[in-house]
Figure 1 (cartoon, rainbow, N blue to C red):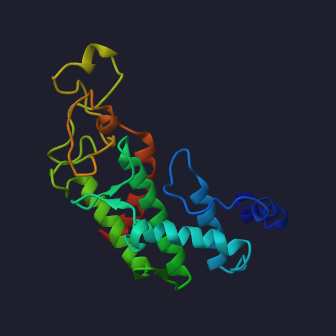
Figure 2: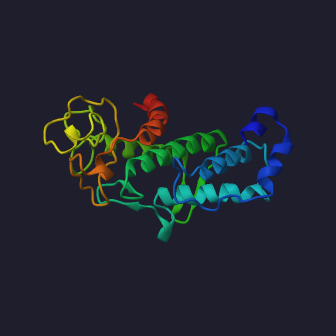
Length: 229
């Protein structure tokens, strides 16, 4: 799809038109990139560079169904939400799946806005502003607007994890209760569980491990919403 975008050579489309379109994804992540392809196809459909018919319509339908589920507009297939308003995908490093979802919602919002289109979900229509508003609420949650009033970005705000899981200096620090020997400014930890609970302990690697795959998409999200602040 990127080669088609760069060259306009339609022979590149044959690869995607005759194979697996990925189906409806449950997440967009470091090892699951199908949604990115689907989103790029949707962009071309919205801009009139691909017809909204077979085989391309299925790509956009998959995008719409995933986005509707993230937005809590897909009924029984909604992504789980914690009581405090956090998307919940899995126990280990959940914030990386939140920020990647935030990124694709932000990108899709711009695609829809440019095409003057809205997303039709089972639970009602969703517009570009709805997507950005939801993304902003998730950013706020990560940065301390949550039941624990804790920023899950190390070094941000007045309260943040001080016992992040780390391999620096080996096990000399792993079992200590002392504060981290250095502040890893900007690191995003794995985050709370499905009930908004978080234990600040180095041995709690599923929640306390810093994850570059969480920070990377968050950079794009913050760049998108920064003009709104």
